Image (tube, rainbow, N blue to C red; front, side, top):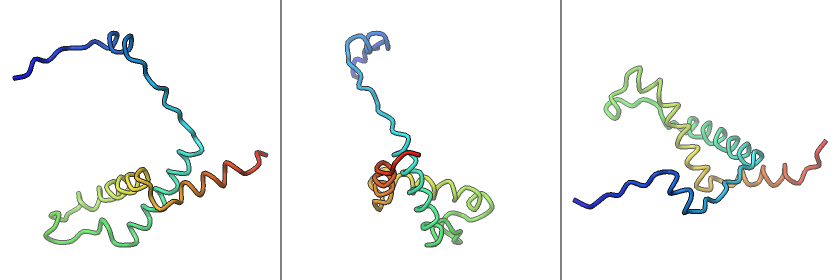
Length: 98
């Protein structure tokens, strides 16, 4: 069994520089819009519909399939998606503020 050493958070933060995570609310909104679009496209394609024999079916599968579809759409967006989020972000970034 390997020898594990416990490192306290104070030791970690004192010796390791942490990068600040830059949050861009406009980019986040564009990604959420793309994820919503992909969610609807996946639903239209029939993803998440109950099929006998695959997931057991039933009310539970029907109730939670929308959460699975949304999570899949968000992962697709984070992996680059279809480019919709970037197009929206660039268009909104260049638009004049009123």
